[in-house]
Image 1 (cartoon, rainbow, N blue to C red):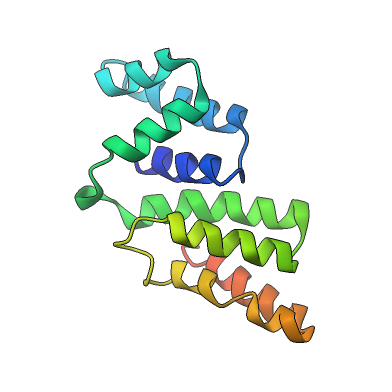
Image 2: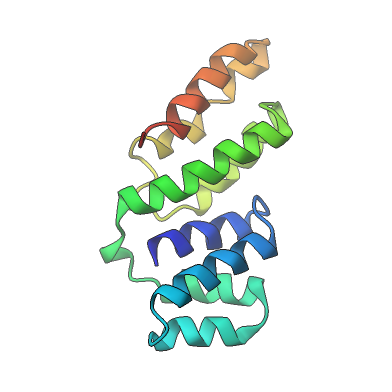
Length: 140
């Protein structure tokens, strides 16, 4: 479920597609087909409603920061490659940071999303890229 939470947050921020979220939900459901919560999510038929339910029902006291972090950073790395490190990307990462569970917002590697775009304001794209890449590869 930790990975599914990551995809739910990414979907809500329009960083991953409905299809990618649904593929992750399908994968997790196939690993645990007797899980009633997953079956209910599968039957919703609407990725955005399912993502909202994941976020509402998740027990944040049981968040596995490593599993969650690996999943979210993998997709953020892909996203950065597709759109580039720009001021718009930086703003999107800050909005993502605001939607992360409060228990991890101020921890590495997530806290970088509050300041990694600052060097872009004075034209230092390389420094921003380095900060984001450090976060993206934090779990490797």
